[in-house]
Figure 1 (cartoon, rainbow, N blue to C red):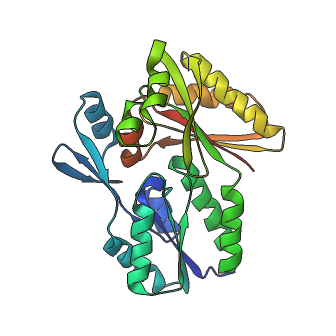
Figure 2 (cartoon, rainbow, N blue to C red; figure 1 turned 30 degrees about the vertical axis):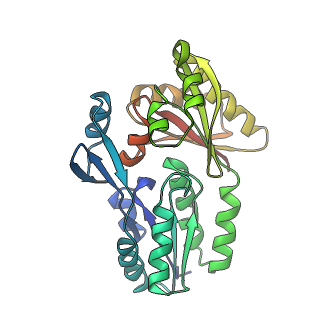
Length: 280
């Protein structure tokens, strides 16, 4: 059955050009500013970001303009009757507002802006599932309902080396950062339904892995778990985590999705490692 709904996402979803081209997805990029130099998300080597963070350079990010979204919508509307635009959670970025402003300027009711209420590989997983659903030929109302349904099931659980990056960007309170940074304790954070909070704290990286594995076990009590692992600069640790989760058995679908988008890495900071966890 022929798909008749287009898809636009922002660059924090982390889709590579091949996947976007194969599925005819238009990606609207955010930007990273290091000192006075501007980079386009998706066209910057991840090492540039975390080296800048380690060197304590001034790293900022900026959302796409409404005009960029207008161009993306117009592109998709040449091929599809309707367009769904998914963005990084509006609690983390003004990208959702820019997309809505773009729609308002175009005055086109065939554009539907959806807050993913997620981030990193969580948002990417939702978009991938939506794409599979759209390829089955479903109508727009069914597709939006399906997206709402799968959004409810998942959350991101992750750790960082230092919570100050999340404080600096206004993503978490200074009180939480103080708790997370004492006695070299590793903070465990959860991002769920657009809300970020400090969930727990453990001592040492091995206990981070143990905590994440325990969270997977909780999910499989209700069915098969989908686990997607992402990181800033912890590729070896990501492999260790993947191995431990794989040992749980056939009730888990686990894979490493790779390095977190440079824009998101700028706010998470060095040492970022975590999972998107949901029911199949």
